[in-house]
Length: 93
Ligand SMILES: [Zn+2]
Image (cartoon, rainbow, N blue to C red; front, side, top):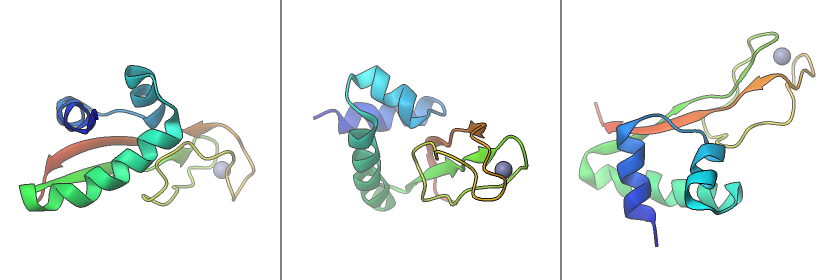
């Protein structure tokens, strides 16, 4: 179980799901699942998971904050030139 380490890393800086998957040697899907658990457990510690949403680099479309993985293409302009979402942990409020 690496959840504790994951929380530590997320308090140090911003990460993409892909970077975290590489760091822990697991697939991105697993990191996404782990982040959902983390998101729920942080509340009682006065912390929260902050998401810088994915964004289309072509038209500027901003994806939903719930989307933690990199979207395949932009629903507005169909571009695949997408900035990956970034996550980190910050104190709530
Ligand atoms: Zn777009």
